[in-house]
Image (cartoon, rainbow, N blue to C red; front, side, top):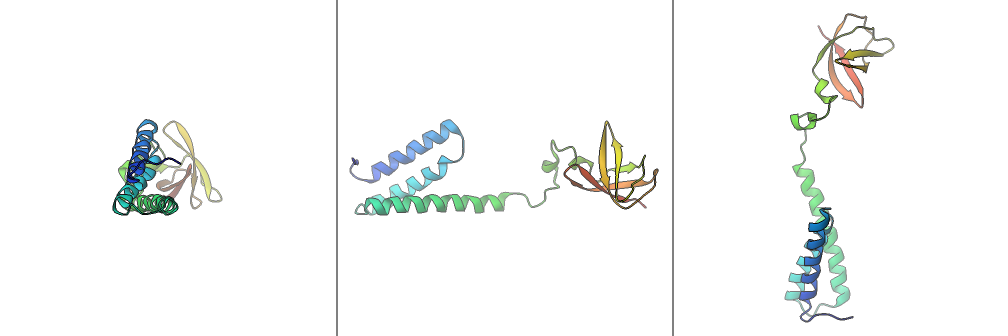
Length: 150
């Protein structure tokens, strides 16, 4: 195999290649390999006697470390409350939580249907007669959980 001397130039070129691929694909996948290659550039600059097998192993480990670090960082940044306003955006069923409804049909055996705006929704709750006012407390897929008001 042919290498450019000093060896760190090879890792710097590889990092630039991964960054270019990332720029063209916008996949957020090659960025981790680019970070690992950049870290290996620094490592081989500091320790040029490092063998190619050790470099390959270091590249694999640094790739795994960068991906794992990003996974932990995103866990911290993600919102803990999924009922915030951003989570409701373009999610029609989440917007129904907290809404008061009057049952046109009774809830029988824990299940029923209710008309909301222009659609029929499946509801779940204790058995109640038609005319009862209920509150939507949760959404599970396309089923609304309701409780009796008052």
